[in-house]
Length: 354
Image (cartoon, rainbow, N blue to C red; front, side, top):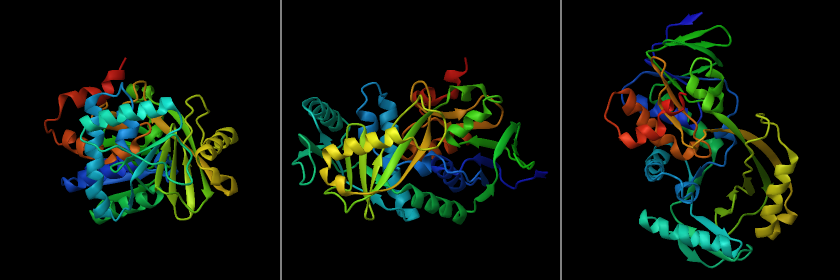
């Protein structure tokens, strides 16, 4: 059954990138529908980190243009969170457990200064065990499950349409759903994370996507001196009488969202080393998600090579952080506006066309 949608754009995926893209397009005057399977994706399963300094500037190989894009997106979150009534947690506390980690954070402090960001050394708070600590006022986080509901509400307020169904195959200006329905639109945006890889038969560049399994655990805990604590690969989030601990990262794990016990135990052990009080905290739940990764860890954002189809995936660990900027970028691209050539080259899906 063909559904002659009144929408000029259909987005596949109601995660953070899909919803932020839908909101940006609605604000620019487009008619937009989002089709979503209802299956919980990486956006739901994540910690909701908005941390450009820790996630990107800490990587010497991360292109400067990408860091600036992430910083711009972090700024956009300020207005979007206010509009959508999304609470943002801050500040973040970075812990150094060894001399090497302290040296790395000192180097990060110097790079932060070149970006106009504050990263200041502070005393290690009571209850935490570390060699040194640095406070980052601009590193934030949100509660992803609540934020998804708030973004969806804003999408509806602006006139967007949500269609529940699983995208199966693509054709020019059509999305065929698994239940036999077909959505028609002038433009299609694939924003359903690693799920977009299933469209690889239609769009060859999507074969560059690979899943990186991440696992998290929630324990009952009264909280810490800072709402966000980071140490090496782990982060701790104090939320409503609980502590969220994330996140494992396993590119070799089977691409399923079933929980594997060994990564969860490793997260708990690392956390106990910096937060001894965790010994008395019972585990409440554990869960997993699949991050959409690319060989260069940069997203696929732009024209897919197939007529009328755009990509917005491959965000790896930074789907929440990058979502507002990706939405604005895609809306400008679809509108035919001039964009930064460096970013277009960095994000172009065609870089994996071979």
